[in-house]
Image (tube, rainbow, N blue to C red; front, side, top):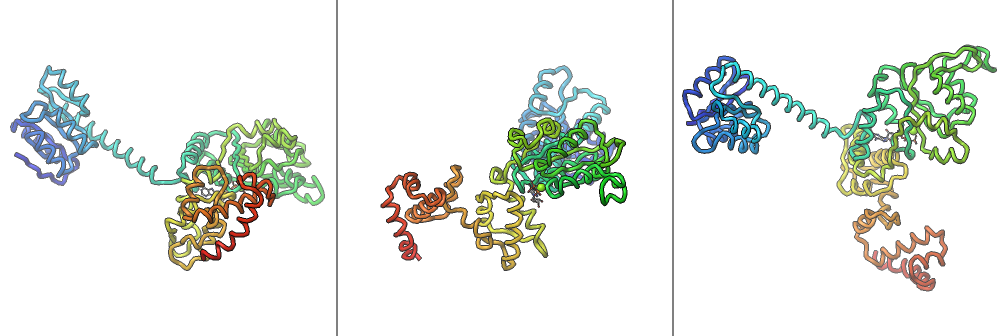
Length: 466
Ligand SMILES: Nc1ncnc2c1ncn2[C@@H]1O[C@H](COP(=O)(O)OP(=O)(O)OP(=O)(O)O)[C@@H](O)[C@H]1O
Ligand SMILES: [Mg+2]
């Protein structure tokens, strides 16, 4: 007998028992509480029922003709792993209770039981199911998003950066962001600010190279009236303006020596003194600094103070170059397409995307963004193809002597005849040796005469092929 007739109720309980009287008792108990019930008289019938209806919890006897309740738990977990099963065991059969839990049952109750006990256990099972569902949804949402705020990326390296940002967003310790130009240092700094408790306070970026050293000091610390010619009024500095927030010192590697000392003092004392002023002012500012310079080298060459470096580098955050994380390119491309497309985001052909993933992007995400923006402007409105990409990107699949395994793959994708590949390789080696034919022929393993002959023949071969 199989009675699959779920009703519109809060939750559906599947009752499995070969004893009809027991089923009936449980059915009325649950229906009284507003549950919907579905009944099955065997493990086999229960499985069919589960396939057809949405049971939220399964309540089953263990001892039944055919497959036992314990075996059914195993079957159910394969079809509906998210559905909790509560088993009913005869009093005293502790072995089967243990077995039930081992098989993956949510819980068991021993017969005879108080109605309250069954209701309570089923309620707990429902709560757990709801919690697990919520977790699954959250996890799906996290997996779907390929970024963190405005910061895009799904490569392991970027995921580590997201995790680090999450971890340190609440602290006031200084952060030093390093990475090549265009890797997204400023985006990271903003994300850090906006994901912590300072989010409601200002984020103030200042580029240390853009402002002459003399001015930078009064920009940062402010000045009092008459501090210097032109200081007609007292002016608050960025440290005060950023109060409670974050000051982003971009290109810190270019800060002059005098100012480095003053900044160090501010970081130590957490107070500033405006230019020309006599009184210090307490400041609560988090410092995030960034540079694309190798600060350790700047230190060893005497251009950067080591003590300041340690004060800034409390939390180091390095962003690897884009060429080392090609996994981030598809989602960055999507984001840039959406940002720069007029009238709905446009798309890119698979070939074009493959080319973008092979290109070494010396200017990192910034260069990629420019390439997308330009391709959008130049293409004729349809999908963006390889021909719409910048010439240097299209050309990049010619032999790149970068020593990376993947570049050979890229070369093979060009489908070049071996002779032509050799011609191009010869030209590239010549370019790299600055036209030094002795050096080039040594690298190529051919003598100078052969090199000369090959270069003579190359244009003829190209003409014959085209
Ligand atoms: N992970 C990223 N997600 C989204 N956009 C990014 C990402 N990385 C870089 N960008 C975009 O690339 C451009 C350059 O980023 P940003 O200005 O942060 O680089 P930077 O490291 O500060 O460069 P520089 O050293 O030249 O100042 C910006 O338009 C930024 O929006
Ligand atoms: Mg920058």
